[in-house]
Image 1 (tube, rainbow, N blue to C red):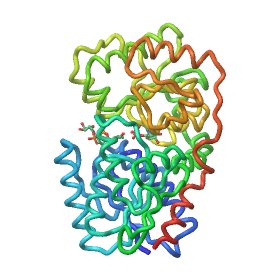
Image 2 (cartoon, rainbow, N blue to C red):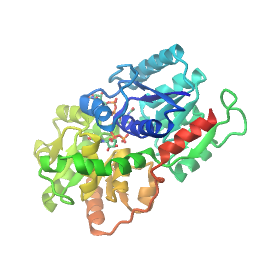
Image 3 (cartoon, rainbow, N blue to C red):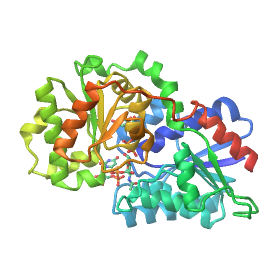
Length: 375
Ligand code: UD1
Ligand code: UDP
């Protein structure tokens, strides 16, 4: 069976590592995996570093689409993916998450009647102003199999009528909705010890375990609104100063570009933070495992914080990963200065519990076995 994995943005490359590892270790006699990189992310430390470090096969295709408006970027991807799918016959495409690369893969494949397998299906923020919410809803509805990481995701899909369909969906197949667990959990469990053994990121920045805050900011909602961005930066800087604790901020290129052009944001506040370029996955894993607390607007980082039993302050108005909030392992603070400060104080002052919520670290195997049975 020949499958095309479509990736483009950093978190997808990382998620794809879990599936590629399972293909290589367990399913190599049944599955031939080809990889298409849209080129959505292209900096060395946003793309190639993960192929090198996580043992992902080099892409068979790289569309080199690069940055652009949503319409231009997505259109170039759809056109490039369509061309590949017309040149070479695939039994299905595997898509991850909710980026423009996900949407483009879903549109191109579904219209050519190539089955779409969506990993991380069913996540909903119920905030349609997020480009990701639009992407994930459209992708789920075009998918032959929705692989949901949590029961909440299964419930979200059911509310939209997406259940195991009795009727034919595509090429005589039914639509399936499968509770698979989370491939990110597979990765975090697999790489935790490797990160411990190989990463020197703590020593490089003079950090001690439990002695720093890890922060990330990249959501357009935060980066493209100076008031929100400066409120977050001010809160991080004040917490760092008042609690005598470094805040390490591996800076997403989107945020770097905005900070370079937004002169309203105080350089004094910024200088109180340990701002570093985006780091490799092993370095990030090591930073997450040893942080006192994580403050982030990233979907992936808030979840990895939970895997490593670190509380998180979520710098968004809502989250798709509601289980983290339900178990009070994370608090929503949005971009509100006082809520961020209060959430930090609360989380460092109270014991937090981290029940197993994201599967058994074998989601990738379950996903591949389901696809094999389906086709
Ligand atoms: C994208 C995803 C978002 C995901 C994030 C993961 C969409 C709509 N958004 O957001 O869901 O959480 O990736 O990181 O697909 N840039 C560089 N170098 C790069 C990549 C980007 O400099 O290698 C800069 C460019 O200025 C670009 C900006 O970052 O315009 C935004 O990149 P883009 O891929 O459009 O969206 P992200 O914000 O990265
Ligand atoms: N990540 C990384 N280096 C960094 C920041 C993040 O390797 O400097 C990893 C992180 O561990 C997680 C993924 O990137 O696996 C999350 O991606 P991101 O925050 O860009 O996107 P989101 O998950 O919000 O879509």
